[in-house]
Image (cartoon, rainbow, N blue to C red; front, side, top):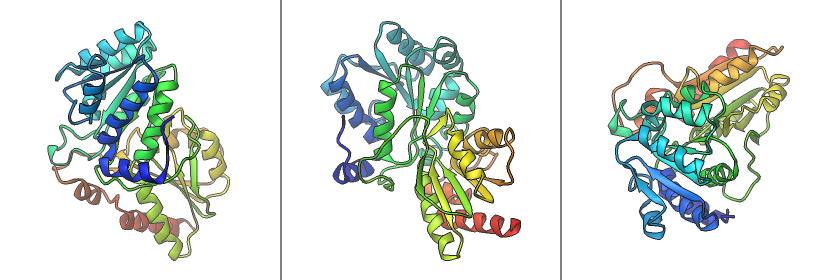
Length: 325
């Protein structure tokens, strides 16, 4: 087990999701000789240089060939290896969609698909590299678990859990270097079990990925306005923790989904689908990336354009809450 403590949390935060992924894979490979990494021209970008030097026979760089990357990962899984296939989220999922559907979904190969730079993390690379539809695509494919960690500490937890799960997993990496810390110390992480970070009475914010931190900050602002807020880290998008959602539907007037993903088909879409199947009196507000292609910009700028900074989230949530009470 990798040590989870405040020192490591700070180090991982500085490295960012990609650097944390690379360093974690070194530790996981030390513990399990079956782990291999297959990269789609992502050795440096995914922080895998040290992994390659430590385990030169366990790192394969297929180049810009994501379909081949997924197919090769499935072949390794057939031979009882545990392959981690990594590229930018947009390419791991969209460019390789048919092989992912066939090998990870239909054939249920034990492949761990990693989406680096999900959301707006690729910054000035622009819409060709933004991973803003990846969750909606993977959610539509049966049999694939989706993990979306809140910070780099939870990314370590998610990678450990993925390695130990016998089945197809997609791990979505959001955020950039100097990633805000949500978890400073060790805690219980279980696939499919959301984590309640703050308990309130009026509003429930269900957030995922790097925006969990922004949701916590937004809740601080709302609390100063006399609005009591529950904040939940929904680190597993599929299977969705409907038990926790049902609990909140019974106590909150407003359910808010917050995600660095398109508003269609991601966390908000999953929550909406569940809410449509049960009896409740709550209202759902979906906050995420607007349904359009946008001009490129730096990470914070792109969040601001989509009203995903803490102050903007608090304004949107407060406005909606006051409209329904």
